[in-house]
Image (cartoon, rainbow, N blue to C red; front, side, top):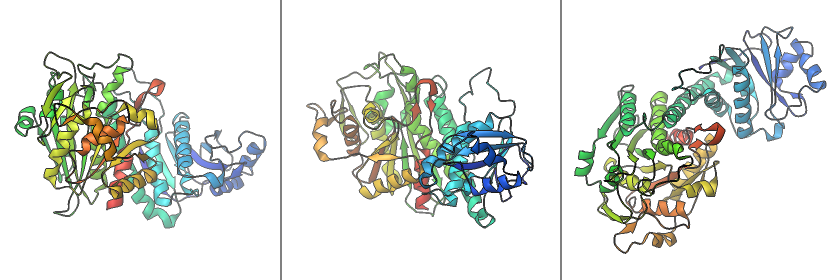
Length: 494
């Protein structure tokens, strides 16, 4: 998608489609009112006849309006003006993008960025407009031999803004487009099947990304190197797979020399069968999404590169498969982590924390300012928060609030859960320093409690994205979350 910023009257612009807003009850936006005057009241006549009321999400397409230079006009219902917030704005943008894409118009001029959004400034509106437009056009059809091709897809979108806002709008467009590309990378990787997106494939994608930027260094450790470092916990998960595990690091040095980096640790289980503690067969195909934490790290770093963000970021991606085999870890096995702490593996399907704990210990070598891990970690988080918010747990309340604020601003929200010492006894083991599960109660919290034992030397936050990383059912597919949250967090730190 090619975006541009322009400042032009809606009735004079030449375009395949002009997008204008209508509020309840049949109240034209300023741009729509200006267009209406040039077309001798065409819009008001249609609205008065009941073609549209202006409810949020409604659309109405008009063709070849007399008195204007465009081929089509798309009226977008925006709901009540006083309730038009960022979530309503995003919903409207997604709807109009789909409508224009299906209309046959290959280009459009969008006047919705001029509307007043209660919790967005001009920069935020344009940034969101670019992100949501691209997200609405994403199709996971890269492996289809016969694609459902739109003969005239939407290819160009101009965003109309007041001339005195053009500088801020161009910056927002650059940032929004970069974040959209990062989200798309995360979605593309997530949607790939496990027979293609293996640990080696993720490593190759990281190296490919590294070639796009002179100040992005990529390195990959193999199992022999991890064994020398004492990563017995991570390697215990890969024992049942013929695909060797990898530990990928990406060092983006966009900030000042010597400035402590933000370290992002992404869980990269490219397929999770549960191992010997085998999962039920229903919906097991969706376990290809168990690497969405890794995908979000790659997407976030891509966005940093494209935005040329003035910050130091390190991505650490432990990646493996979790499969049953004669060599696979068994319930009751005890493994030694890189930190020296021993773990009794009571359930081999609680493997994410086993690979993350060694990656978190490894992260200390970068002398981080903060460490954030991102993982599709627990089904308990899906039960607690559904598909609306990621679970957030942290050993530092200031860091947690930074992430919560970034999520609100990016409309990629998280919700903080307690990380109290009261839950730690659930991890007690008679035979090792800890067990890898804490029983049925508070599963999301005890998983984070497990990880917290490897993060005592730095400020750390954990994002459990099991409920938000992908959708199931008829809309099955990766969402790219929480790339938007993470990039907003990094933007706020610049």
